[in-house]
Length: 626
Image (cartoon, rainbow, N blue to C red; front, side, top):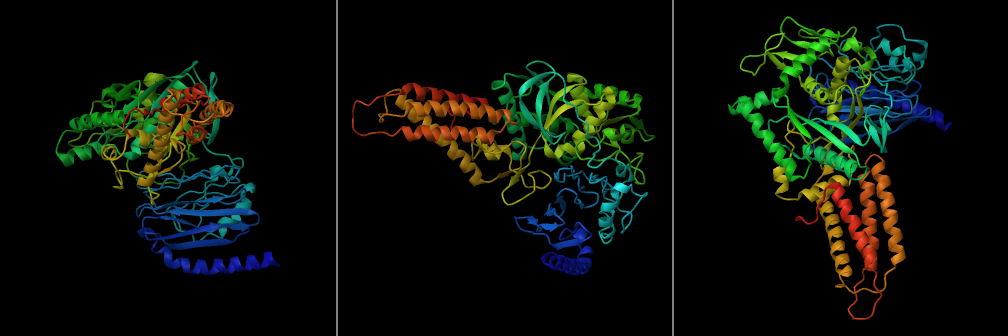
């Protein structure tokens, strides 16, 4: 009876919401109203609508719907009038993504165990990108062709269960749902580009979270105790901000841990993007040469990294110093049948030519049948390798005429020129996973004619200002420059702030969070001062529990090593250090009366030595001012 009553209630709610949703649909594109539909199991549609928050807290969550044993969770975000959302669903449920056409695309990836990955930003384009989701062979796409569900062909039998859900969603917006018959023939839970093979080589002694598999994998290197590492560098057209600092400091910590804890020599290459649309635009605004602008901000970036104590890469390589290599790289891709030139002098990568190898991060298939495109490229997902020159822009001679490289090709060329057809580690911010890293992989595997070029992709989470879910970025005008930050706080404080969260998680920045980091540094420094005074005989204490302290020290060493080996768990390692400091402070109880107290300086000396060694590993120097 309770179940029947609940179903009737949900159906009545669905009808009321469905009727009222028509009023919101007309306002959906102005960034103020959001209308989303969540399809429940058994054909029940729950419509969620309402105004997007305009204040500092842009988050909003819909309630869970438990229908037929499936749990559906709806989450949405306001993104400065450009909104993006995703739904989370349990096993056997349906995932629906909604997008704003041409600005953001829902790149939700769904695996058979109920794991749903967040939507990623897509650069502006004349048509939306697709979101392919493997749910019992079903694929959902962002389309603009019809207000109804578009079926390009009959679904396979395995899709009939989820077909009922689509048929009740006819009122979804025109740009929401499409049907991909290509995915319908795939096994349940299958995903485009999902093939990954653990490399053969030398285990490094730790596990890392690999974005290619969305799981932790043992880190296996091609050479013993040597890691090849390619890092995406800055586009140098303005000052670096804390969003950049967060990514580079976090990966600097990881690099130091690999070197100083696991004994791995890291060969790191970083590219400096010194020719780009943003550089040209900013140079025109300032009425200076793009070369002068990029050189100035390249040095500015390096100075900021030095102030943050980020180790420089083994080598910096500029895009403009590698134009001949980029041209040769493109020629090879064309020769291998994976790119084409046009009559206007552009060169595009042919995404369809690599089939299911495309879509390693977001599950997007290479099939573009039925999709329209603009310009001179063949398919909507094809991307530029070489751009024909425009008036008053820097250009270089090529077999296709004067022009300049596309964005993605620079990283593929430079990484391949140093490391060849195998790369151990590739790093960058999570916003670069798609399309930048996706296209990098496609280019390299097309060039080298291999199935797996990069073995491990590590992505750092965004830095947000407190009260906002927007990442810190120049385009949103919500950034704090590194120079302005260092006028108020120290590099040590920022590094401790980074240690308190996992490198791949989003982190919220505020004065309070920086104060917390400063307090932890002060606690460690004060303990080391007191313990050093005790070792020198300048601090008198009652008898200490030396056995307990030795046990705590040994346990801390084990816990820190285990935390570092578990995908660089710096919060866990830092907690272990602070626990050791706590136990040490409990034993350092000063006395006012002189007496013949037994002393245990050795254990405190060992604790001091270990804590200082830990701080050195993560790049913190307490000798510098806080």
